[in-house]
Length: 399
Image 1 (cartoon, rainbow, N blue to C red):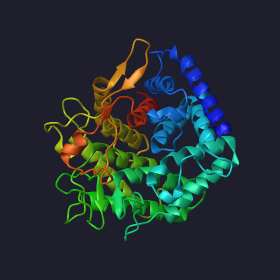
Image 2: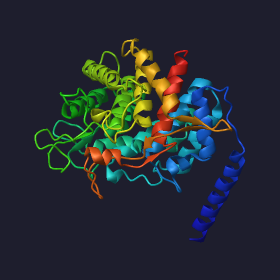
Image 3: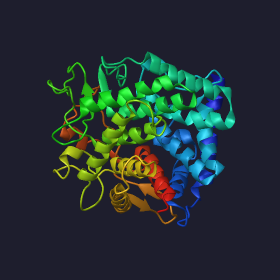
């Protein structure tokens, strides 16, 4: 007990010291926007475990969203402090046997898989065995993950028979990259299956969009009794899905059977991003299928996720280059609608829905009124990470 107390005091002292060191820092307006946002986030969160407003250590998908962007930044510009920022989180969270602080595989939650993606490059650079073991532990969860009758992963053990668009992002890019890096071509078909099953069952033919989730049993109160679908297209859910497509396709070989089906889904997603883009601002609404309706609002995480998807998909040759016009209009809208810079050059991104889900306790109905009344905040990692990535993609395209 005494040792734990001392360790907590040391940790607290280190954080206080870090905060004071970062408090005087400014961000140069001459830097690329990707770097400016990363520098600003490091000022707000001197230690990476503090991301997502965390007061204590937690293994969470939000950390992965931002730290994956930091590793992309390191790859692009070579400044090792971005790698070290992610490394410090991994080192703090990972035990020698590969187990992870607060990660319980028995929960069978796809949300816990997402941050595992940062281990690929951390292990590649450090060759520390604990990171390889951690990757193996996360891959093992996918073996145990319960599935729908068609083989789609349940979002979580506590959400039985349900597939959420969020969950595709949380697990499928990790799954695809693991297969690529570990010479497991037999896994690609299962990765493709996840996209095909969720797209089939969440697609709304009236709008061309994809609903937030699907309940195979049609048992949830939020599920339509005929289709099993939730009631609306929540912007960020479709944003997760869009990013999952481009991030996973990057690792699925071009010759793989069924890859064309995933490309077709991406084609439709890109078309719907263009179709539902707000004409006056260039960004997107919190509830897309109710765009412009009373109470709805322009939301930053869906907007950054969509623009990232388009830029990356064009760069990799997945979609036609004409989508750059849509991406550029979205980028301009993001900068006008959501990005603020203080007197010290510190960058903030505003108007992000903090969280939204379905079911649970207290129960989340998935109705329109529910989505538009969830908490909104600034500098949420679910907008910060995609913003860094979209700026990087734009910078790679020479814009």
